[in-house]
Structures are given as structure tokens and as C-alpha cells.
Image 1 (cartoon, rainbow, N blue to C red):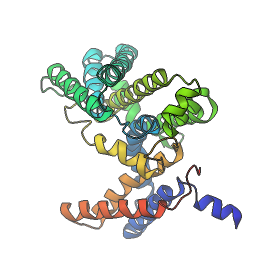
Image 2: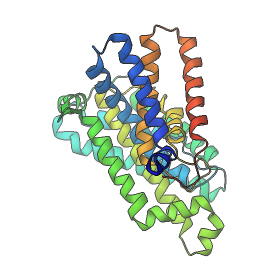
Image 3: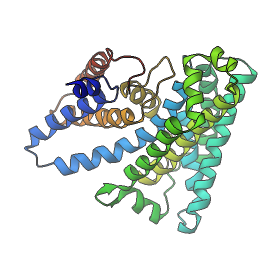
Image 4: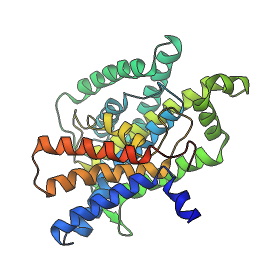
Amino acid sequence: MRMLDRVSRSPWIWSWLAAFVVWFATIMVTGGASTLDLSQAALTFAAFSIIVGIGQMFVITLGPGNVDLSVPSTMTLAGTVALKLMDVDNAMIVPGLVVAVLIGIGVGMLNYALIKALRIPPIIATLSVSFIVQSAAIWTNRGLRIKPPSFLADFTTANSFGLPNVAIIALIISIFAWFLLEKTVYGRWISAIGQSTPAAKMAGIPVDGTRFVTYVFCAVLASLAGYLLACFSGGAALNMGSEYLLMSIAVVVLGGTAVAGGDSNVPGIWGASLFMFLVVSMLNTYGLGAGIRLIMTGLIIISVIMLAGGRQPGAR
């Protein structure tokens, strides 16, 4: 009983439970005929939300007011520039990836430069940067849908060991993120900053340096997600990152990360990302109209948050 009570208080359990309930409700309609296809699709499409969600989680863990609204535009610019550089040439895959990562580093540096130099709230700074980055993506793309190299197109849409390749990449990133948070000094630093910035400064923690690295890390993950998404979808489009603005924040909140900062949760990002995809699939399966789907999605998300709201602070 004690073990059951401890699990029920874990912040990640509710997003996973909600995802399972929605998954089960969906396959009941089809009599289990689409179980494998639905599971594969959920893992595939959730992978992109997981990657950007992890980056957003690191930023939100820094404390109240910390959020990165430049994620969608970073994804778009990275995907567009990388695909344009690769020009459907398999030999240019690595240079394309390097450029995408460099774009993420540049955006992250610009984000924190505005936050630190102008002393404006992160939400305003990152929103301003998003306009600049999106304009750069428009100028680079010029309305063309640039196709990825054949190897990348095949890789991002294929499976290995029964799992989608993009989901495997998301898993590797998740393990790395968990290691950073739980096993390194950096992870303890961002948690301490999120709990109390003044106390962190008094303890000798390099607050500015830690926040700088965190914003860069978030932007790099966004650029990587854009690189993969552009290859998976068969080309870079100017609206490819738009749905990940609120999605990257929603999966963090639903996954059990404390919005007030200081408490992050990697497993919860997976449960929340799967849930967000599955709930839309379920409502589509039941044949509900677009308006009803939006209302139901909002109500279901609120219900999950309310169920998880009684957890004890710091529970993992």
C-alpha cells in the first residue's frame, strides 16, 4: 500500500495514466484492429513534442517567468537552412546537422543576451527573438518546400527494433536530460535557481552562466527537432513549428514539472506528449467536429492537471 501511495503521488503517473486511458478508449472503437498502428503513430509524433518539451522543461525549471517562445521559429529556421544546405545530397547530412545545431546555439545566445543586457522578462525577449528568427526563415525559404536527402527521409520514417527511429532519438535525448538533471552539478544548480535565485547566488552558484547554458540547450533541442521534423515531413515549411509553441509548454505542465520552478520531470514529458497526440486521435476516431474536439481537448487537459494537482511538492 505504501508503494502504491508513493506511485500515486509521483507527478509523472497522471500523464501516463491519462495517455493509457485515451489509448484504450481509441482502440475499443476499432476493436483492437489498429492497436499497433496507433501505438507506432503515437510514438512517432510524440517524439518531436518530447524533444522540444525537454528543452522547455529545463528553462521552466529555472523559475517563474522563464519560458522560451522562440521554439517554433528556431525549428523552422534550422529545418529550412539545413535542408537548403544539404540540397537533397546524402553526403551533406552531417554538415546540415552541424548548421542546425549552430543555429540553435546562436538563437539561445541571442535570447539570453536580450534577457541579461536589456533586463526584460524572458517571455518578451524570446518572443522578440522569434520574430527575428521567423523573418530569417521566410527570407531563406522564399516559399519553397525544400526536400530532405533520401537517406534522412527514409531514416526518420523507418523503425528499428520495433520502434520508430525518431522515438529512439527522443529516448536517447531523454536519458541524457535525466542524467544532467539527476547526476550532475548543473542539474542541481538549475533546481536550486528555480527554488530561490537569491539563495542560489548566496550559495555561490553561477546563476547567469547556468541560465545562459539552459537557454542555449533549449534552442539546440528545438533546432534538432526542426531538423528531424523537416526530414520526416518531406520538406521544410514556414509553419512547421507553429503547433509546438503551446505544445512545448503544455507537455511540461501536464508532465508534472512545477511551473513555479525548481522541480523537473523527464518521464512526465513522455506521458504528456503521448497523451496530447492520443487525445486528438481518440476524438477524431469518435468522429467529433473540430470545435467539439478543441473543447474536449481543453476539458481533458484541465481534468488531468486537477487530478495531478494534489501531489506533494518535490515528489518524483
